[in-house]
Amino acid sequence: MVKENPNGYILHSAEHLFARSLQNFGLKINITKADTFRADGKAFLLIKEHVSLTDIFKAEAKVNEIIPTNLRTSVETFKNLDEAIAAHKDLRFNEPRLKDKEHIRVVKLGDFDVCACKNEHVKISSEIVAFAIVGVSYLHGNTEVEFKASRDAIDYFADINDKAVDLGQEYNFKPPELSKAYKSLDKRLADALDELDKTFTLLLKQSENKFIDFGNIGISIFYKTINNFARDNPERAIILLSKNQLFAVRGANNKSDLKRLGEMLKEKKVFIGEVREDYLNGKVLDYPGANLVINEFSSLIL
Image 1: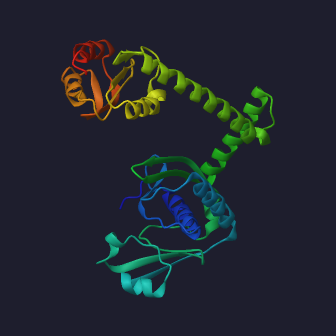
Image 2 (image 1 turned 90 degrees about the horizontal axis):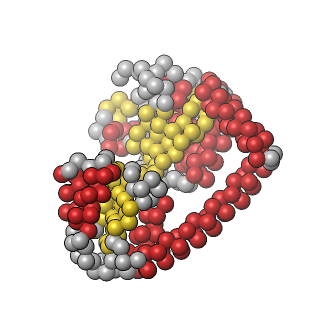
């Protein structure tokens, strides 16, 4: 394996501490991929399960607590996986990859983590310096975590601190009050969205239109409202269009063939996205063209 990032071993050691921290919280997680040797210096961890943000940032804090304790790295080799497990009851390993392998390499980071791994690692945990979570995304039940280590992590934390100070100066509150200010703003936004949902639902109920053109207005904010409306009004079908997005959904009793509409849009090369008989969602490539196709189709909607 060619390790294009010369500091990838630092990131990989940090990943070991992070994964073990999550498991020490009692979480049953399966690491499906640890990508720490990228040429661009970025590092990602893919977890098969959904892991909450609370647990992720608790684990980040634990890693930064462990790093300066100078855990020393040691390596052992075993004939097979069974022998490695017998020697280390808490061994972390990817069984599908190692089940029939011979010569299992096991890396220990002090008494904190023991894992079957073929990659290079730091000699002592303090080489990692610092660890920072910089992004978390969820897809199909999986959790992808982007992280930094070493000086990059320190720079990231410093940048967050600078931005908190800037926000405090701009909006006249102290940085330690950032969480309180955010929660207040978040509640006001939630209240406003709730009122917007009620207004939009009323508009749908009173309107006979099946196709609504929003022009420059983003429509993603209405997805949940439209889905709820289709659920509560099973005879209806609604199509929403903006210059960038298309979203359509039908109720359970409506027979409109939205899949056919999607196929028509794709044939004209004006739309790309998810197409089902009861659901469309995607990017508009040609707004006037999409508008024309939908207008031609809308007369067929029951």
